[in-house]
Length: 611
Image (cartoon, rainbow, N blue to C red; front, side, top):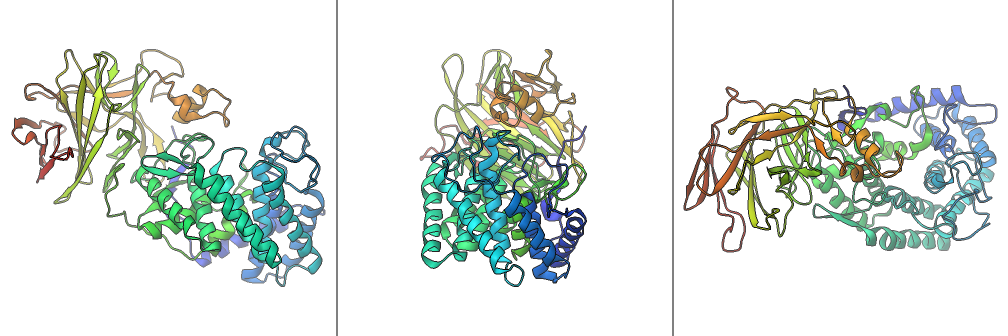
C-alpha cells in the first residue's frame, strides 16, 4: 500500500544551472512538437486550469530564449502569445460568477474552465496565474517581442490586475497562496508601467498585503499564518504561500515579506518530521506540492538556517505541472521561472535552536499541535498519528473512554540537551469527567535513534492505559508507504488494537483507505471542497497503540513508559522512584528527574537529565 505523491525530499532534485537548462530544453522540445497551427501550447488532455496554461508555456520558452538563444523560439513565442491574446482573453462576465463587485466592467480575466458558466468559481486564481505568466513574458520581452505585441500584453496584464482588485472581491476563496500571488503580480507589473501608474499599482499591492492578508492572519502553534481556505495552514498550499513570499521579497525588497516568510518557514520546520512527512490542512490532508514549493523552502532555508528541503514532494510534478501522460502543463510555469532565476541554495543542516512545538534529533522527531499534544511521532522509520477513542483524538492517558490530553490552563514546556540526548518536558493541566484538575507531565527523550516517552499523572481509580499513537506510514528512503505496525515497547505491556466496528468513521490502518480519503469522506462538503481536517475530527475510533501503566510507580501516581524505535533486547524495564526532587526515571540510556507539577518558583517545569 503506497501513499500517493509523498516521495523523496525536494532538496534531492538537482538545482544547478545545467540541470535547469536541461529542464528548459525538454520543455522546448515538447512545446515545439505540441504547438498547433493556431498557436496553442495547451496540453490536449487539459480540462481544468486551462485559461493561463498556454501563456505559461510561452513564458518558459521566453526564458529559454533568454538563456540559450535557440533560433526556433522567437517565432513560437510570437505565435503562442498571439493565440492567448486572441483566444484566451475574456471580457464578458462569466455566467454564474458570484464574486463580482462591478458587473460588465469589460476588464479581462482568464477562465478556469473554457466553456461559459461551466465552473466559474476558479476564475479568480486562474486570472492571478495569467497575470503572473504575463509579467514573466514581459520581463523577457527585450529583443523577443515587437512593440505591438509587448504593448498588447502590458495592457492585458494591467487589465488582469484591475479585474482582480477592482471588479471582483479580493481573495474570494480565502486562499492565502492565491492572494499573495496576486500581490506578487502587482509588484512585478508595476515596473513595466509608466511611473505614476506603476507607483500606484505597487502601493495598492502593498496595501492589499497589509490590510487583506496580513491583518487576517490566523494563529496556530504560536505563529501567525496567512489563512488557507479557512484554515491556518495547509500542507499542500502552505509551502506555495512561502514561495510567493520569497518572490515578493525578491522583487520588492520589502522586509515585511521576509519577516512573514521567516515565521511561516519556522512553523513548517517545526511541524515537519525529520523524514519530511507531514499531513493536514483544509484542502488537502496528505497530498504535497512539488516544484511549486522549492523556491520558498530553498529561499527561507537559508534565512532561518534549517533544512526545509527535507519536505517530501509530489514527484509527478518534480519540475513543472504535468498531465497524466507526464506532458508539460503550463499552469504553474511562473514558479519554475522564478525557481530558475533565484540563486539561493539549500541549507541542509537542522536548526540548532530548540522549537517549542518540535523535538528532533537524528532520525527521531515529534511534532506537537497547538495544545502540545503530539501530532506526528517519527521513530524507527515509522510515522504515528494521534489515535482516536470515543471520538477523541490525541496522545495521553485514557480512563473509561475519556482521553486526558486537552488542557484546561497554560501548558508549560522545558527543553534540555545533555550529552547527546535531547529532551522536552510538557506539563499540562487537564480536567476529567469527575471535574477534578490533574497535571499530566509528559517527558520525551531521544538519542537520535530511539524515543522514550514517560507520562505521569495523579493516580486514577480504575484501569487506565496510554493512547500512544496510530501507526500509519513508514519511510524506506525513496518513498513513504502505508503500514499498521510500529517498533514500540512499554514497561506496562503494549498492545496494538484495531476498531471493532466497521465504516469510514472507524479507521483501520490495515485497510486500503488512506487517511486523506477517509478524512474527505467524513467532511461535510464534496471532495476538494470539503475540509478534511474537519472531517477527520468526526473519526470515532482508530488503530491504536495502547500501553498499560508501568509497574513500580510511586504511590499516588500512574506512570506510563514507552520506547519507540530499536532496543537492545526488545524489552523495556525502567525503574521509577519518588523523591524530594520529583519523579526519577532510570532507563538503559539515561536517568531523568521530572520535577513536581507545581514547577519552580515561577511555575516553570523542572527537569534534570543524566547519561
